[in-house]
Length: 230
Image (cartoon, rainbow, N blue to C red; front, top):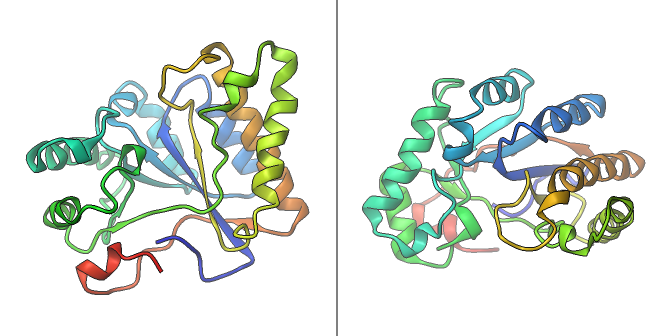
């Protein structure tokens, strides 16, 4: 899945959630703009913030597993991949029914070209589909350009303006993160960057008349077709 059928909509997809410093503000912003998002949650973070998982579901957003530990699962054994995904989904299932068909985004989108990964995911959840993206905020890099708090608004604007100018925006699947998991410089600004990016993005989408919706379920098709990019 790479594009939505309705060009008047976009899907904001947020990986690595939920973080207690940022999620409440993000949920408030989404409500303010009457917007919905799709969260791919990391199990080790969700385990420490169950109330945020529950609140995300209560507000009508979609929630899927992003694995338990934020590691390259395509470099692990099939057993590890399935156990990692199942452990995270078992936690999320306390807060909402397990979606069927299931939408998958592994950490780093690892393995989307690998037949072995596709077969393993199909054994884990028959009918599941990998979610790709078009415009990306590349927010793992934004904090590295922020030497001080004063830089945050300007540097976030650069990334948001780039996404808003992307020809794939209408009907697009947008990638961002809840405080990206990496060891790059600028970690002290991650909280402010995450919330600022979402605020500016939602404002820009509203100005363009684009509505942010949750990802729809994938259409039925043979399992191997779900992993061919079109």
